[in-house]
Image 1 (cartoon, rainbow, N blue to C red):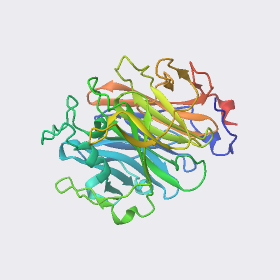
Image 2: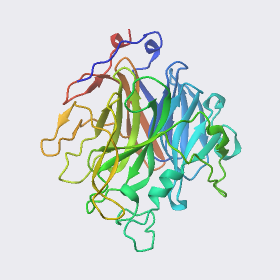
Image 3: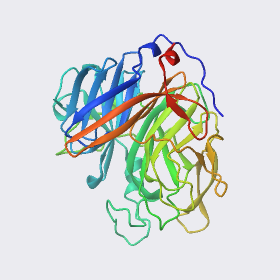
Amino acid sequence: MATAEPVATTSLARLPLKQNGGTWASGHVQGIAVDVQGGYIYYSFTNLLAKYDFSGKLIGTLVGWTGHLGDLDFNPADGKVYGSLEYGKEHAFYIAVIDVSRLDRVGVEASKTEMFRIVYLPEVVKDFVADMDGDGKFAGTVADTLDHRYGCSGIDGVGFGPAFGRVDGPRYLTVGYGVYSNLERDDNDHQVLLQYDVSGWSKYARPLDEADLHHRGPETLQGKYFVRTGNTTWGVQNLSYDDSLQRWFLGVYQGKKKSFPNYLLFAVDARTQPRMSDLIGVPRADGKGLEQGQLLNLADDGLKDAATGVRGWNQKGDVGFQPVGGGLFYVSMNSGSKGAQTADLTLMRWTSDANQPLVPAKTEDLR
């Protein structure tokens, strides 16, 4: 059971208890990022990014891409927002690096500004296009296939935090795979997490040009890790690190395999050391035994499934889940219809109750 470490309250006192992210002719909300010190909240609406200040004033929007902008995180080290950006049909997956300090008006076209740049992720592409059934053909962007290593459908969750096994040291961008829901295979029951050092990414980042998507990106990783949760629907939707609980959180769309508990939220404690281990259900390429990978145990907290040992919570965390310090989290609820999508944020407090881990925060929680 984790309890929140105390933090300075000067910045927390300004946090709004609730906020609406506007109504947009866009896709549904995918994730949020919060600049606690600067006083801004960023919303990803799939093909639109909105910037609001803590008072609820709309500061600006970015538009103009056909790819899928997913989860977001704010990097205090460079003042930029990082988000997953998918072009599945083009077999191309990127991190969007957005200089949000320059976003001060509505309707900025991403392809016409230097503030929106993209970095290609070749490791993701290799797993996405893998011909796993050996028939010499790649099945494409479909779930009903044995292709796609680990069931990789692309990427979605992103978050900055320490190297796995540590609570201090450099902060790395951690990227969660999207994973297809497929009940007929056993090699898709892990969440896959990649860690990157982004300090040298300026040499890869290029402006968005959808007519000529570039392939410049890091060939090396800080690490590649696996978390056995059971298959979920589209993998890690939201990924975040909470300094106060010293814990990584993985928000997902509920899985469908009856052999797993199919929780909505999972966690990995930051001090958990990765260990090289067999990846259950993932055969080696030569068919002799199981593939091995750096495995991370789930946090010893929350509900526990007796049959599998999997732990987690039935807590929504799939379209916006962002720790802000002091055991406080913003959780987004999506609603709306085609052409009118919105997001409602609620500031929540961690309770350590397995059945209700978060409750709405009150003004006194900010003092």
